[in-house]
Image 1: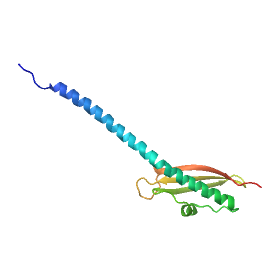
Image 2: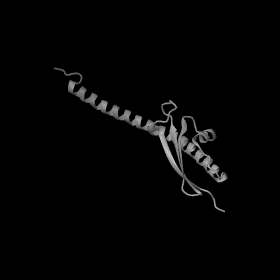
Image 3: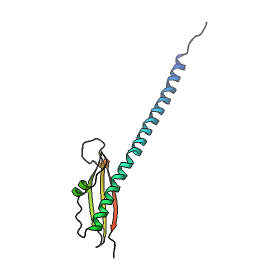
Image 4: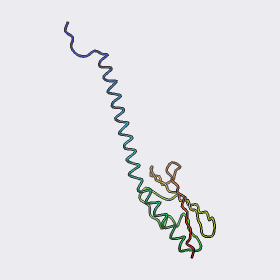
Length: 131
């Protein structure tokens, strides 16, 4: 009797191993795509926070009465597409020192609303120069 081809057990084992290999490769591709998105959007987040920090610092240095609001921040600081400001909290420690918490959001689902998993907040400390 001449035996040709593969047995059912051999085919099943090879399909199982191929399935494990393909699943691992697809997971690797998905993780690298997520990592790429983080790297691709992180410069936009840093740019938005840097522009806000510079504008707020200039407002504190040149004005004695602090009139910074979320509305004026949105009007004067331009963020990259998909990013925006969602919160501003100002705490005056003393006459010369301010703690300002700026919240930005990345609008991932493009609905224009800052959701909890899309927001990032940074705390800045500004002090007026004494003469």
